[in-house]
Length: 387
Figure 1 (cartoon, rainbow, N blue to C red):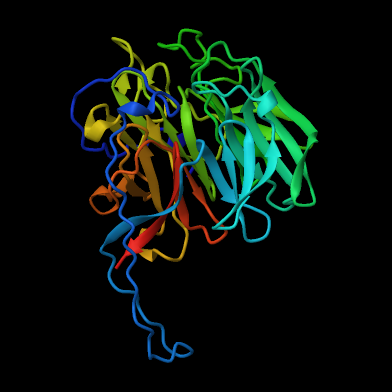
Figure 2 (figure 1 turned 60 degrees about the vertical axis):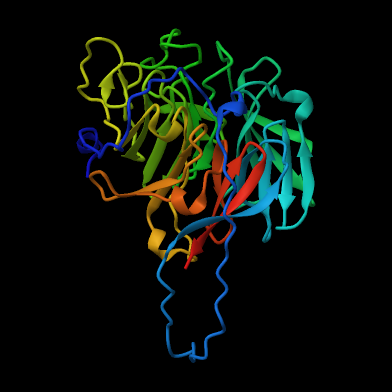
């Protein structure tokens, strides 16, 4: 399907209720988030007596999903990715990176002296090179609050802070709407999500402008050059590239949070600030040529205030979840998912009855087996099946 055809896809709206909220973000005051005890039920089954060399045993029916608390009391984990060897790497908003083996954290990098950790600023994204795990890439806010994307090199089991090679530096006119996620695409480029420069009402006029702000940015890591790949984003708080598709969760302003799915092709316009979700942001608008989100969540729906984008499940522990995009909300703390069928969001599910509320969800991550983790402002939770 051509990129042009994708621009007119119509998605399925989430069930919502009207209770407009003011602008919120994944790094604002955590006291407004409601939390209930996290379910940590793990079903232990007796060993099978079936000869598994010749017979495949179907799993017990899925009853729901549960969180297993991996670690609590953490200083704002912001990203979790497969690391070198069998460990995962965890980035913390204050400006540190640690290797985690499931039991212990080992510090591998500390750049707190060059990171502004305040409000929506901080260390915001992390990626390893897809073929050379000695190359680490970070997105952070520097001392002036500018967006910086840099490459660092591992030296043995730690990262050499002096090896930094800056790939991109972009001034930010305000302290919010910094976006944050970085991820390699199938073309080998590094992709970065940036917001509209902050403030409110797209006051700096970046939403539909051609500069790097308010869009997805593609970075050639060898030449350290960047171009704006797509535009019209307010504050993409997590995107996820799966094969040739990109799932973008964009934080709304007055009334609607949204998730869009588009091909990883140039020229997509996500609509801000002409549109907020599927609605004109101002009194009148022309939505021609704008990508309509596949799903929107109205403020007030189960406490929704600021969407947290997640990942497409491709692990093996929960085959029933294959192809589902998981997402949450900073204030709502719920867990929801849908599957994109090429034309819209289908199989919408709310898993919160079985998982409970996680708290202030700020990010998702995956390990080497592509199993999913949910990160809150102070904890790491692993998603597991209830059977």
